[in-house]
Image 1 (cartoon, rainbow, N blue to C red):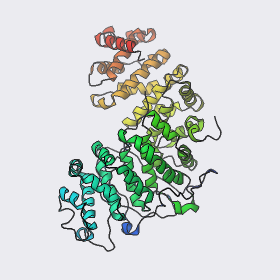
Image 2 (cartoon, helix red, strand yellow; image 1 turned 180 degrees about the vertical axis):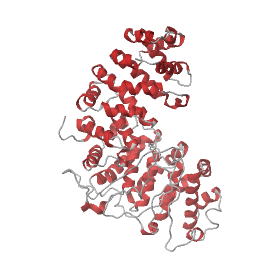
Image 3 (tube, rainbow, N blue to C red; image 1 turned 90 degrees about the vertical axis):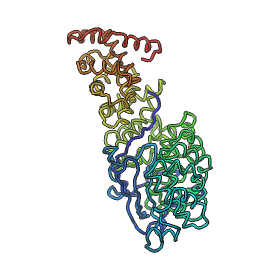
Length: 556
């Protein structure tokens, strides 16, 4: 069942981020941070147009225009920030859970209303007339207007054309853009960060190139020093994209995590009306939690470093509790899987019943699939090991907190990532023998429905279906009376199809093993015979091999 890895799924982002209130007498009163990033405040020159964030109908990215933050409120208005994108991946924008969306164009409004050519300070040709090679050359030009033209063109091209990303890498554009982050022009910093954000989106080679050119250090230095909200948005979005690369996780945990925690997570989680000078923009916080979520999928030693980061877990749990207290379970920053004491602190939050209650409350009330998946993932991690602690977590979820009904309902989700995570969580809990009878009655119907509905198009859900077959096997043996009621020709036909379809690499073995054992289980065997089913369907060369292999490997 393993540790939880966030998948590339879309987000439904119904957001009602109202003014936060202080909920705890804490050591952290959003005090001024001498080593943190400066308080956010948009540069008027960058926001004179006063636009809104809107979406184009593209499969991957969003056109972004910005509003200047009010400074008095931390609201994200649903009709101004992000439209709901929970529909088809083809027809709507669904940012990856492990990468921030790309950005098509950052407004580069100058002091006067001008057309593109004039706004670029008279650089040769309009932005649409130059080539990618010329754009990269412009980055090293002595004139800032040429540099801005080149960075803007690269940003635009890499939004629409993945091949352009490879070309910019070949032409040496990445180190040039990183160099521009170190300059003094705020507008150029912002556009360069946005261009890099697009360049590394779903491009592993470009992520490594940014790191090779010491880009992470440049990004963190600028994030620490800038007070321009739009630049902070681009830099944290860039870090979010970079954090999906496993090779960069150790460096980001060591160098970026302390800054992000101290300068963004803690102030945002304990923000009050009296602390408007320390306002952190909600989009900056959302990008930050996206980055932290990716980092939480690193190795055990690196996750341990995250747990040891001062104030990180306390701040995230306080933030989640605040949202639940005010009835806002769909806030988009809740996608982070936050890590019997009455007042838990730090790492104690991870295994505290209050945390389990928070996760289950979110599962019951949230309509945001990304939030649901993240909460299932957190519970999956807590129940993943074979230790007594994970056993206790499973028992608390089912016996004390009555979490099984809401978890079971997610097994029918049409969202592949959410369904996979819920299925893995159920698989983890099914290892606890004392819970199996209860689980069989609640989850077997939904698992059987899932397996019975398998089609050739579901190959990408191979691991989910394999887990379903294994859980079905475990629960049918534990509760034969419930198992007998699940038997149908449709189910057996589906298992037979799976067992012989080589496209389902793991599910076919799990299905074959299940078929073999069904015939060997006395109570279920009698039902199969009554329904006129033939032994050869269950005991044959395919199922025998699967049984021998599983027995040899002690997989079940």
